[in-house]
Length: 292
Image (cartoon, rainbow, N blue to C red; front, side, top):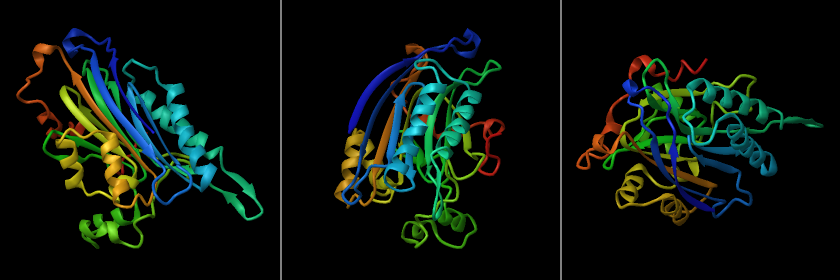
C-alpha cells in the first residue's frame, strides 16, 4: 500500500518570527514483506505530523497497537495546522495508554501489546521562535534527515545492540549482525509511562526526512538508501529495495519534503544544506533526558 500527497501547514505566528505557511509533500508505503503473514506496521502522513509505528505482540495485537498510535495522533492534533511540542508529547503519552489498554490477562499471564514510534511534526515552538520540526522516537524505528547528499540518522535506537555500541563493546558495523539485534529496550505499551526521545530542529527553506521501520534498515544499508533518494526515489522505491533483498519483516517508509518560508527566501542553488545544521542544544532533549 502506498500514498503520495502535498499539504499546506498553516502557521499563525508573528511576522517577526518568520510567519510563513509550510508546504509539505510526502510519499508513504507499507508492505507485509516476503515472510510475515500479517503487517503489524502502520503509518500516518497527515500534516502536521508524519510517523511510523512497528507493532509487536503477534498478529492482531501488534497490528492493533500500531493502529492505536495512528488513531490517537489523529484525535490529538489538528490537521493542516502547526501543533505545539506539548500537544505532540500529549499524543505520545495518550498513545502509550491506548496501547497498554490492548494488553490482556490470560492463563499464561499478561499478553502485552507494544509498538515502536518514530516521526516528525511541525510545531510552533512559542516565544517568537517560529516553526520548528520536532522529531521523536520510542524503540528502533528511525528518523533520518536528508540534505541531497548525506543521510543522517537523527533518532537513536532504543535497542540492546545500540547500548552495546554506546558502551564501546561492539562496532556499529557489527550491530546489524548481532544476535540481539531484534531486542528493543523501549516501546509504547511496555511501561506505564512512555519515555520518548525528542529533538527540536530548525525548520527553514527546503528539507527532507526519511521515517522507517526496521524492516527497511535491516535489509538496505544507509549508502544505498542515500543513493536511491539522490536518484529521486520515493517511498515505494525504497520499500521495493527492501523486498528485493528478502523482505524478512514488515516494511514501512515515509519520505517527507518541506518548503518553509516566502519564495524569495528560498535559494534554488542551495536547496537541502540546512538539514546539516544541528538543533540548538538548549532546545534538544537528549536520549536520557526524555520528554517530561
